[in-house]
Amino acid sequence: MAASALPDSLESAPGPAQRSPAIRAERQAPRLHFIHYLAHAAGLLTVGRFVKPAPSATLWLQAEPTVRLDTLWQAWPQPDLWSTYRLPASETPGALAFAQHLLDRLHQANPQTG
Picture 1 (cartoon, one colour):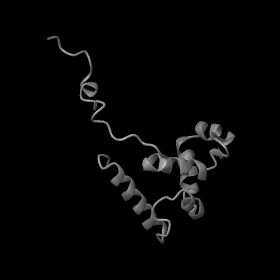
Picture 2 (cartoon, helix red, strand yellow; picture 1 turned 180 degrees about the vertical axis):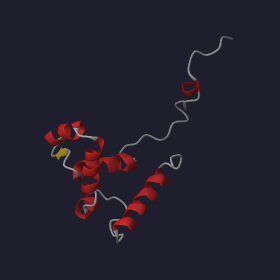
Picture 3 (cartoon, rainbow, N blue to C red; picture 1 turned 135 degrees about the vertical axis):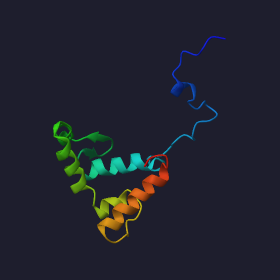
């Protein structure tokens, strides 16, 4: 039998019976849900009937990486919006404890990272 022409990474990719269950809601994908929250908090999305990029998103994408990171870092601690998105630890006191709790939860969602 001839050797496979597929790269090893594709050879070992899970088949239909091995795949994870389908994600049916954004909250089932904690990292995606957090990124949605963060983009909303930073004003990069317009939220209405449909979620769309805000005009400011173009400028943000063109900015230097440090400016983009600073924008997100300044935007993320919004307790009311955090509760609206039903993200973890909305009652955890202190920004550092809150950030650590968030990182722990994200790591639990995907323990292969970090």
